[in-house]
Image: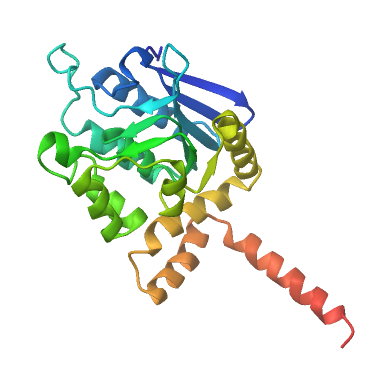
Length: 261
């Protein structure tokens, strides 16, 4: 598929970078862009060479950074409306993908764009990021069509989620990191470089082990402790990595026996 509204690049082995690319509209989300983004997600899922991907936004024409201004409210009148259900399907596809995703955020990231960023496994932000949720402010309901109130609550806690959605406040990179939205905050000129450092570390891990880890962590918060421990045992068998863990355990045990008392 030829992309017009996103860029898909593989700058290094096992790492993909997907860039929202409508800078003239602040990378606003419309039907064609989301179709392309869904295609890219599905392509990466099938591509064994890709082990981790970064999601970012193209800079504005004047060079100022921008992740995305959310859903393009003019797109429907222009004939480029988002098909029903596509946004939720897309965020769930990112969430369920067993290849780590890193949202790399600078500039504006609001509403639907924040929902997409929260669907990623990790988020790195610039000190100059401007993050917000204006679902309630603009649409009259704060739940969002792609899981906004659910994702915000799980990520930063119910009280902070209420504050952000009910007030529509814009937070910068430092606060985004402090409340748990972002894993780290970096200077603007070092953001992508730091994201690639993280991506390289992930790409160097055993792919099956990464899949197992994501499958378990993504689900264990909805389980009791005993259920989560049992899920870890079963998932290891399903992903065929438990034998490797056992072999390593046996090796450590044998080494301990050789140590002097």
